[in-house]
Image (cartoon, helix red, strand yellow):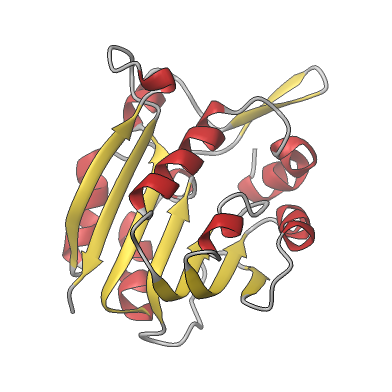
Length: 209
């Protein structure tokens, strides 16, 4: 299903349904950025604000964007702060954010829905400051190989959201092409069981202009 339509529909149950990917990515973000302080964060794919609530405790200002107006409506009710601005935005369209305006960018469970990674990394390289940090948390490609995708149930129907498989080298290659250096790559497993397929892939980059 179309991404915007799917997340608008999913929003009513997104925070309450069983979702191991959502929950483990929240853990990975907090561990990866636990020692990171920032002034201005661009949060891409903020959804219902599951990470926004935590991020605002670490920095000064957040611009939180999402494709789904229904997800944003929940986030606005959940996170009431003068330090956070929520905006509906399609990251595949041209960006109007001021150049060099953010020292942190966060992409949580977003890039699986984006076909052209180079386009996003190029845009990020322009709006992030030198030495800015970029965090990416995604459904692990190994999980995707096994058939796992963003999905939810609507009544008796299972709805599968449009997704693309990106290998780890796809992320690192696109990042390095636009000045991002890999700081950390980490995998997260259900119940920390490392004998199973990892669920979440996190990548942390430093932008060097």
